[in-house]
Amino acid sequence: MSDIILEGVTKCWGEVTAVDDLNLTIPDGSFMCLLGPSGCGKTTTLRMIAGLEEPDKGRILMDNKVVYCSKRCLSLEPNKRNIGLIFQSYALWPHMTVFQNIAFGLEMQNMDKKSIANQVKDVSKWMKIDNLLKRYPSELSGGQQQRAALARSLAPKPSCILMDEPLSNLDAKLRIEMRIELKRLYSEIKQTILYVTHDQVEALSLGTHLVVMNEGRLRQIGEPLQVYTYPNDLFVAEFVGSHAINMLEGIITREKERKIVKCGELSFLLGQTEEISDGQKVRVAIRPEDVILNSSEPVDSSKFTVYSVQPTGPDILVRVRRGDIFLTARQIERTILALETEVDVSFQPGRLFLFDEKTGQRMVKTDICFIKN
Image (cartoon, rainbow, N blue to C red; front, top):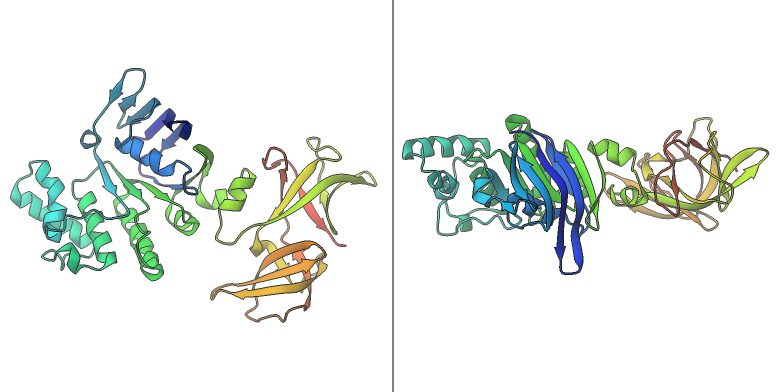
């Protein structure tokens, strides 16, 4: 299959614009995650690609073929788009065995019984449910039902698999296991997958490509770690990441011919730049893992006191305070600091980001470093 291409796709529900002039290319063989808060338009986008919802305008191409075009009043039915669909509810037929559920799509293709049996056998082995083929959905665990739903979608060999929050109904441990299985499955089949989720961990760990949406618009697209490390704007910076990013309000000032960002009691030095003017309001963003506590290295640091400590198992999140400034750090040492303990705070070089307060856009040509104070 070639790329899936959306050109100027728009969908409105009354006066609400669910998807606004979306231009998106889903590369052939990619695992693309659509990430965003509830109501951002990600599920509507998936359903328009599937043919379950009709856009108000725009064009959608699949397999080098136009499947929707508002100007031509063309819209192919879902069963003519060669796609596999997996929903949050699994949607298995309760009166059919696992074998019959997996075979259903193959029977719709008028495949002979021997070929159906071979195909079901192969795909059930892939999904490690070949010993469950005689069971009914009610006799399966949540994870087994999810595997059966995946197997049913894979059996007809669709050109693309569309998944709408398929792991939301599973408990935390099972979600982790299923993420591992989905990653393994993708590495074996290399099939185009479009995966809708509001879970940042799922999106960052599963996808080869990440699309962040908000209010019907595409905010950023790229490799997951690239989006996480270099967010384009304030929304992406604050939304992507399991631990909230630190945001400091600041203003540009000048000291001895140097441009400085003043954030309360903290100061940051700007590199040579012409795009920032004195008095401009900005925000400095630092992720918790880039805030260093008790560093033994000879780096500039500032004194803070411990405000709270949150052990989460793998991580210890420490909230520190200096005046009106609060920062969250992901502590490396496996020790619990007492409240009001005084600590040195510094920042990873090159990991401080500056955003324009008015536009929300990251100032990509600006170097910024911490000044000890």
